Image 1 (cartoon, rainbow, N blue to C red):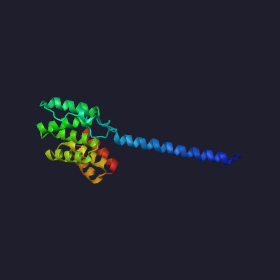
Image 2: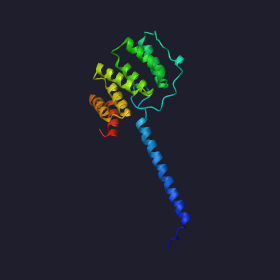
Image 3: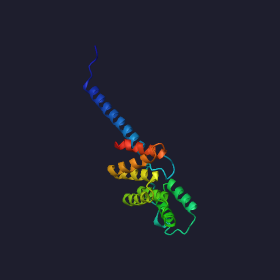
Image 4: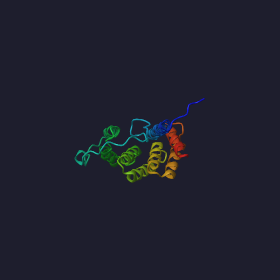
Length: 187
């Protein structure tokens, strides 16, 4: 014969189950948020989400004009700043690269991501669309375009761009990431 529980024991049991359920919910939600937002790689060329960017530097810390003409040096500087989440400082460098090499799709991709992480999603999408128009076979920009559209809540545009990225070559890491994101949105 089982002993009967007192009202206090029932109350404690209900409170325990409530907090246990909340803990399971919180851990599960955290897992999915981190999985969706995990970086696929540490370079700026990866289109996966990153944690919130560091606070913006004061305007005086952002160069207003860049006179450097060495594209390799500019790319390295931009990539270094991006990987340090100093997106506001990377933007003028990516703009300079595009000024020197307007057909550089990677620079459009990187600029689009930096703008997105700075909160300028509309500007990011404009730069990404411009880059995709330069070279429709550039897989990475389609992945980034899909990712930013997904973050902006436009699942139809995200699905279209991610399908394009996947269809270009599903066996590459970019194609596999596009497939993973499509799976998340049911595409």
